[in-house]
Image (cartoon, rainbow, N blue to C red; front, side, top):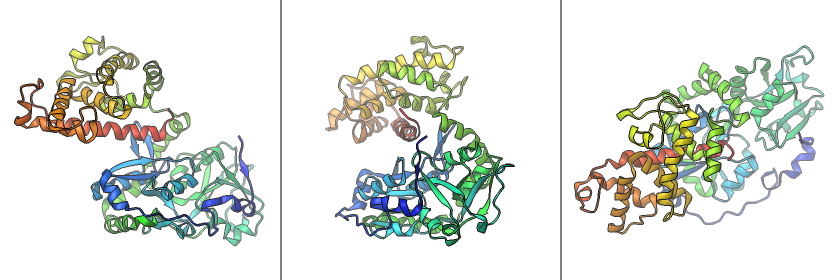
Length: 460
């Protein structure tokens, strides 16, 4: 495994744009507030790990994810979540307005000098040394004993400066390995497996992982308590101010205390870590991944789209029976299921393979006129939920009122909502009659949100 190894004084000059130097990032004219509300969504960057943002049994979870969802709801905005491979790219996404917020544990004040605004403190944590408990690796019990050891940390770790500036570490011949391939989560796994001996991370994160890895020690604090922030572009000061106003009230609520407990102190965090980490390492979403991928390859689909539909319908659980007699992983109604040869006694893999034929039918129905992949799949999913007749009716309404019948977002979706009004569903050219469109438009939004999460976490 190739790993970049340097001492601090050798590595720091290579930090380029985001180093401790006075390198400036040009601040361009940009009306962030108008842009965000025009698109109706908040673009946020999260770290994919076992506490901040992860997938557990198909559902997106994480302390900072749930906190972010609360804030977006408060602002009346949808969420678009991005992930990046390293912190350098995260900062770049803010500098280039690809993201509105960096959400997570950011603590380096020097990074905010040129182009970043920070929120108020989300919470405070010290750094701790993570070390393995074993006969051949005695546990270091005090910071003055940190001598002649090698500590592995992620290459773009935000706390590297805190460690560098601590004379107790700097003056004791401690060397650092800057790992370009592994995040904190993976380094703790490597430490537990005796691949490395030491790493450092925030105390609350270490405590959560120590409940899963029973051979690690996280008792030695190696820094003072550090305030943690969310970050926004300097031109986005109104957003940082909005976070602060909301945060001041939310941190007093029981919901905030419950989130801290849920992800960092309770047995739930242990359960989620035990079930999440192996899946993260194996890049598994469900036990049906191989079948999803096989079917997707055959039809030139993104397997995560198909998986998103199945999660919405059944959460990957077998043997379910739903409203109106729908059944199985895909929750198809009996008439459709029979048409494609799907029965309740089939395995989940067989249901996925045969259910793909129904999705292929919908793709062929709309694909000849709708070329954009995102829009096409939103039509497919809408028809899967409501039936193609109602979607076809909404496209007819779109034509009549000057909307684009080949675009779902802000066009056909709004027309489907009109099918609950007699003025529209009684139009002679429509065939489906009344339909409560809100249920379907919400279904499509949920599908797309789940798909975006799966894209962030699982490779194509």
